[in-house]
Structure formats: C-alpha cells, structure tokens
Length: 269
Length: 269
Image 1 (cartoon, each protein chain N blue to C red):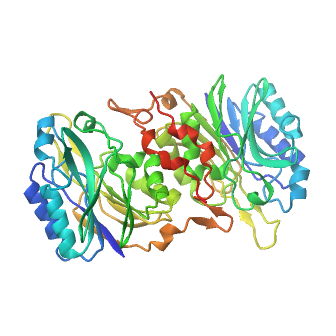
Image 2 (image 1 turned 120 degrees about the horizontal axis):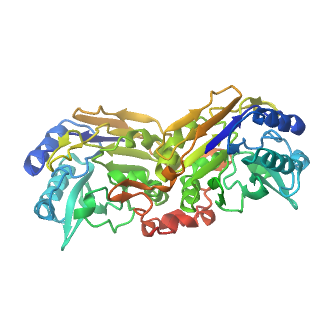
Image 3 (image 1 turned 60 degrees about the vertical axis):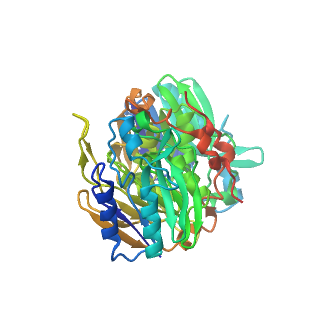
C-alpha cells in the first residue's frame, strides 16, 4: 500500500487557495493514504481568538471536512489532515480522518505548543486508532511527538501507521522519528509545512519542512527538503508493523513491564 | 561536578583482573561519579545457570560490592556498576550505587535481553532514584533504554542523572540517547563495554563500545570510540536537568497529560 504526505506553504486565511493547492497536488497522485499538515487549510499563526473563531469549523459539516470527504470519495483514498475545530464555544487543534465512505473520526491535539495554549483547549479524545481497509491508523499532531507516551499509546492501541500532521518550528523531530518508530515498531508519516509566517511583530515562525516517512525498523523511507513543496510517497508493508519481535526471546510489547511504569500516570503540578 | 564512565573489555570470569583494571583506570582520575559497564567484573556471556551461580554475589557483602565501596571511600566518589546478583535461589542482572559512606542501593534490570532470560529473573525494584550530595541519580541497565518508560519513570521520580551500565550489541542506543535525554531533560551516562565474547559456539557477541555522556538538551558531551578502552569524563551542571521549561508557555513535565496515557499500563499477553 502506498502512503504519502504533501508538504507545502499554506497561505494564512486563504482557505480556498489552500484547498485548491491540495486538489492540484493530488490530481495525478497514486496513493492509498495522504497526510496533510496541521492547520493545512488556514495557516498557523493566529493573533486572536476572533481569528480562530473565524477560521475554525465544525468537523462534522465544515468546508474543509466536505472538501476532504470529496477528495477521499473521488480518489478512493484515506486522508488525515489538520484543522482548527470549533465545538460549541471551545476550539481544538484537531485532525480528521476521511475515507471513501466519508468522515471516520477526529483526534484533538493532546499537547498544545506555545501560543496555541492561548486559543485552543487541550484535546480530550485520547490516542485513538481507526481500523480501515488499508490498515490501523492512529493520529498525533506536531508537538505530541515530543512526549513518548503519545506514539506509545497509539501503538499499544493497535496503530500500524501513525499519521502526524505538523507545523514544526523546533529542529528535533525529523531526527527523532526513527527512534519513535523503532521503539514502537510502527510506520509514521510526518507531514510538515514549509515557509514563514510573520503575523505578530517580532515573532516570525519559520517552519522546518523535512517531512518524512519512517518504517517500523526506524529506516527513513522518504524525506523532503527543508524549503521545497514536495509530495512524498513510500510503499508500506504493514506486516512489519504487526511484528514486535526483536529476536526469538524478545518481543518489545510482551517484554513491557507495566507494573514498573506507575510513575507515568503521575501528574506534575 | 564531573561524571564519567570507564569503557573496557572485561575478561570473562576473571574478577580479580577486571577489578584491578578499574582500580588502575581510576588511579589518577578526577571525578565525582563513575559509571561502569553491566557485568563489568564477570563478563557477560554465561553458558549455564551454574556459571551464573558461581560468578554471582550478594550485593550486600560480595567481593565486588566490597571493592566498589572501598574505591568510593578512598576516592570520595559515587560509583554505579553492574553485577550478577544472587538473592536466595534467584539471580538478577543488577547494578549498585556506592558512595563515600558505602553501599546506597541496588537496581535490578527490568527488561532482560535475549538469553539473559534463561538465567536471570526480571527486576522487581522499579525505577529508583537516590538523593546524593552530588545530585539525584537513577539507574537503568542496557536494554532498558529501548523502552521509553524506563528513563521516563526515572525522570518523573526525580532523577537528574541516569547512570546506564551497558553491554550493548545492537547498534541503536548511542544514536538514541540524545532523544532520551531531550524528552526527559536529564543527563545520561551510558557506560558500555568493548570486545567480543565467543563462549557459545557460533553465537559470538560483539559489544559496540561508543559509550557516551549526554546533556538534558540532547547534546553529546563526550563519546568513546567503538573499540578502544576509554575513560570518558564530562562536566555536568545539574540545574539544567531540573529545568523542564521549553519556552514561557511549555514545561515538558507539567504539559504531560497522564489521563490520556492509560494504555501505557496495559499488559500485552
């Protein structure tokens, strides 16, 4: 099965334009799963709650969901893509999964980065995994990668592929994803964006590109440059994500010793 | 404060010789904390439970503990070192911490690697941290590194320095320790061994050396070659291990969301 991601430079607030760019990129693409960046249709650097309110959507019926469901149906593919979600008077940094039959679900980002905390609520969905025709897909968003618990929970919940919509500005993630995949024996697709947003004086954000697709053995199967628009595609063999054995005596999941891990559930104050 | 590790090629079964080599290496060394490899005084590749029984010791009163307590007292330093432990009719892959005032405690390896499972019981101590004059020291042994829960639990339990006695044969650990340190904001000292043991026909073990000391920012402060005996030393500033802030709005410990991590305590069957 073929999976990919589209790294590009979304224009802030230009939803129509950004959706059209995704449609163009997909026109001749041959793949089963596409991952798009965090906030791929809106841009990232919100300056006020009003802006968030203006650009957020209901994931059930908004323009972005309709567009993604349309693309999924038309091309017969699964798509994971990030968008600002409105639910009543709350906003979430979310990602949805769409398939040939429509919307399959939403993940709300658990670990909010920096000024996202001013505008969004922390996710309350937990680390969900969806069983699809092409494999078991889990979602995490951008900064979630920093917390080893995120991909661990997705893998323990059965994910074979971790779709990872991102707007990375720190340098560490591309170098870290091989270990995240190795320690969990899953595929990961980090769909990052490129470009710079400079909407708040003196605090420009430069996104680092370098989207990548990594195998359960920690091999980088495909990676994009730091500053170029790229449609990245790799062939995945999900059998290798189901096999957690390291040698005849070690299985990295069966060898886990949860009784020794209680500190993980401690909350810092 | 100065911490280091001694990478060498222990001779199997030659306890006296191995202890003498450590004593020589330490003779003119100037440091506050020394980490020695897993099974540093006995060698690694046991062929039978009888061999394990012969070379194992009580950690309270064995020859190795006495030697390490003596070195700690004489030099006024803390030492973390791995040894096969006998406790009644059970054997553990353990590491002890000694200080100027004697034995401070023992950690028993939680995640056993490969044929260790034939001879040793999984550790039952959990991920302990000792408060010393030079800082809070946690211990994990070799393959424990592969499980992100190990260093996470040590860090959550207050470790500022993770002492990591090792006999690594797989290639991944040296490249992975920077992320382990970054994600937990702790120092780590991986004391690996060098050389090859070929005591079971057709299954030689080549140890990969490359011991390393990593900072809480994921910088490699010092690292050893793959095949040379090395006394590695680095200056540590433990303040940087106490600071978990990433920016004015993110603290990587306070940002953890344990309510979303329940899958971590699930046991695979």
